[in-house]
Length: 317
Ligand SMILES: Cc1ncc(COP(=O)(O)O)c(C=O)c1O
Image (cartoon, rainbow, N blue to C red):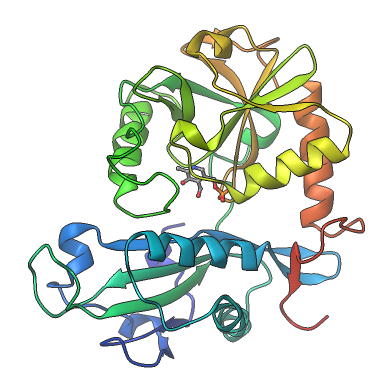
């Protein structure tokens, strides 16, 4: 369902850099001369709240908000809110909107004042939105896997745009990848670095499995430091798997036993073919399945979670 037909009641936002408030969603608008609209001067997060066995809970809320403030710092944005304050506001917004499960979108952007490229006189605005969002790569993707291609677009190289910042500007690159993949009939595109190593999908990190060992590109390969990536690395090691962060050549994708994406939106999504070459048996592999099962037990709070702070209850239950 289109978001415009399924709007939540409230958005939380600042105006002119002043204290933020909960406003009815239809009034949560910005001026067309907003700096961020012209120069992509904004950073954001994507977070999920799950309807768990123990009530609604947000997955790794403070880790996401920390990355948000890190992204803002890289872009020299002074944000007058702490991680703890933003966490409280987020929980209150979910309660006001009455969600059981939702996607959460905090956004920090340079607002409306003047339109030179130098952004310092424009106010730094903060907004938080929530909405209900299902499986990002399709309902069947989690079990059946997806068909993807290696994009003709590379991930931006270091010292062009900071890949560790989750900046909207990076998603100009991501959109080119996603549109190309979509128009060629694939669910997603995999970006290589300018040296030809595997980086990530337009909105996901990537893992490759061969002979029981799990490989994923390190931060030096221009990837976003994904929270789900970190969760899967910790979980896999906890389950006894060997996880190696290393540069991955393109052809390693084709001869892998299993490949999967991770991301807040994509969760853990198996990849069954790349450039029309079947991965392993061309279906979800056993290690991917094992990691998915354990991951979903955690986000649904069906087990004691070995890592403190991974789940934050929303309604105090
Ligand atoms: C480019 C990119 N890489 C990786 C990820 C996965 O990050 P996370 O697991 O924190 O959602 C995302 C999703 O936000 C992304 O947009």
